[in-house]
Amino acid sequence: MLFKIRLHFLSFALFVGLLGLPGLLASCGSKGSQTEQTNPKNDTVVTNNTSGPEPRLDSVFVIRAMQANARFKTQERWARKFYRERQFRLGWFRQHKLVPQANTFLSVVAKAKDDGLDPKHYDTKEITDMLAALKSVDQDTARRNQLERKLDVALSGSYFAWASDYYRGVANPRDTKNDAWKVKRNKIKLDRALMTILRERESTYPYYDFAPLHPEYDHLKKALALLRARQAAGGWPTLPGTAHLKPGDNLPVVDLLRQRLLGGEATGQTPATVAATAKPVNNITTPASTLYDPALVAAVKNFQRDLGLSPTGLVVGETLRQLNVPIQSRINQVILNMERWRWLPKKFEPDYLIVNIPEYRLRVYEQGKEALTMKVIVGKTLTATPVFSDKMEYVVLAPYWNVPYSIIDKELRAKLVANPSYLDRLDMEVVKGYGRKATVIDPTTIDWAGVTQDNFKYTVRRRPGPKNDLGDVKFIFPNSNDIYLHDTPHDELFSQTKRSFSHGCVRVEEPIKLANYLLRNNPNWDLTSIQDTIAEHREKYITLKEKLPVYLVYLTAWADANGHAHFRDDIYGHDKSLAKEYFE
Image (cartoon, rainbow, N blue to C red; front, side, top):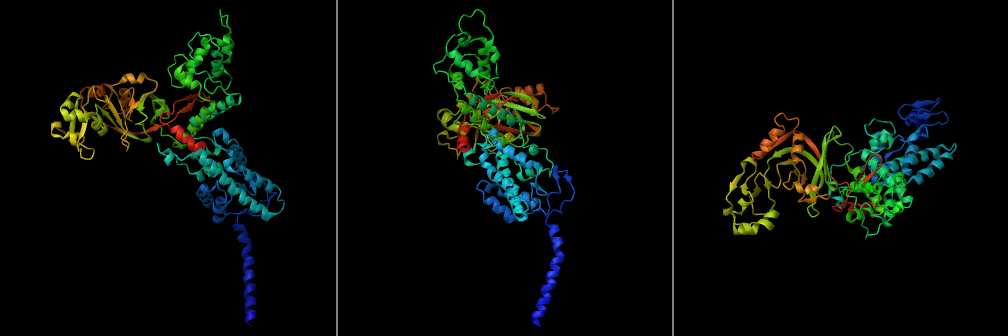
C-alpha cells in the first residue's frame, strides 16, 4: 500500500514537472527566431538559421572564468557588475550570433601597439581559438552553448583589461611610485562603457568608437606613428659632440644635420621640407649639402622652438644635446605622456586654468577655448611644484608674504639674534594671529636664539610693496601643499627658457592681466580699481563669484593635430620613475 502511494506521488510530480517545462525553457532566454529581424540597439541581424534558447551565465561561471585568466583577475568586479546588470544574459551574442562590435574590438586590440600598449596583454589568441572552435560545432547544441558562454566572458575580460589600460592607465598614478601625481582621477565605469559599445545605453563619451577621450591624446598618437615611421626608415643620425655651427658655415657635419631635420616625410619633429634642400643656391661653388643655408637654419630654429629653446639658429650646447636624443627615447617619452592623458579626468570643465610645469606655461580656458596664456616660473628640483588639482577661490591684491620657518631658521636667525630690528630693513614684521585679527609683535621681545618650529607661535611676514616676494597679486586655491600662483618682483627671470627657480609656488608673468581676467564679471573690479588698490599697499582679499578649477600637470611631450611633436626636459624625474613601471 505504501509502495502504491509513493508511485502515485512520483507520477503526479512528473506530470507537474512536464507542465512547467515549456515555461522554464521560455524563461531561460530567447523565444526562438522564425523570421529575420533587426535589433535597433545593436544593428545585429537575427536570422532563422539558429534555434534554441540563448545560454545564460551565472555569477559563479563569470567569477571562475575571470579568475582563471591571470590578466583578467583584476577586472573581475567590472565583469560581475556588467553581467549582473543584464541578469546574466550574454553581452556579445544575439541569437547565437556575435555582434559586429566583437570584430571591431578585436581589430582595435590588434593595433594596441599604436597606443603604446601591448596586444598580448589582452589574450586575443584564446578568443581566436574559441571563435574557430565555434565554427565547427555544427549541430552540437550543448557544446555551442558552452563555447558561447566562455567566449562571451573572454571578450568581456579582454575588453575590461584593454579599456582599463586605455581609459584609466597602465600605471596607477596614486601608488607609491607615482605619488607626485595628485590630479583628480578619471572615474570611468568600465561596465557602463561596455554597455555603450554594445548600444545598450547612450553616452556623451566616444566609447562606442573605441576612441580616446581627449584630442590631445590623439595628437600624441599621431606623433608616435610619425616617430616609429622615422625609426623604421633608419632613425636619425647622431651629430658629433664637438659640432659647433652657425649660419653660413660650410662643414661636412651639416650633411648630418640636414638628414636629422630634413630627412624624410616622418621626421617626428619638423614638417618635411625636402623640396627646400633641392633649391639651387646662387653663387655657391661648394656642394649645397654641406652648407648651413637659410632653409636649414629655419629648420633648426623650428626645432629649437619645439624644444622650448631660444631660436638662435646656432647648433651647440643644449641644441646639440637635444638633437642627439635617441629616437627610441622620444618614442618612449610620447608613450609616457599618452599615459598621463589617460589619468586626467575624462572631461575638463568648460572654464579652467592649467599649468604645465615642464613647459613653464599657464593657460586659461573659457568654454573650452584658450582665453589667456603666459609664462610661469616653477619650483626648483629640491622644492618641486607638486602635481595636483584644486579650485581657485580668491584673488589677493597687495598681499603679505608669510616667511617660511626654514628661511627664518637658516637665513634670518643669526641676524635677528644680533639685531631684532633688522626686520625693518627687510620691510618685515612679526604678527600674532591671522588676517584682520593679526596684531603686530615687537621683535625685540622674542628670544630668537631659542626659537624652534614647535615653540614659535608667531608669523614673520613681509609687508605689501615693491620688496614683497609675492609681488602685487596672489591667487589662492586652498590646498594642503600650501601652493598658490603669485606675482614676483624679479621679472627678469621670465626671459630664461628654463624657469625652475621657486620654492614650489608658481610665479606668473602677467599677474595684473590674470587678475583682471578672473574679475571680469565682477562690477566692483576693473583694471583701474585693481591698480589703485595695489598702490595703497593694503592687502585685499576678493572672493571669486565662481570657483575656477586649477590643474597643475606634468607633460613633457605634446603634439598638434598633425602629430607635430614638442618636447621638454624631465625636470623632476617623473618620466624616469614612470618609465620604470611602464616599460619594465
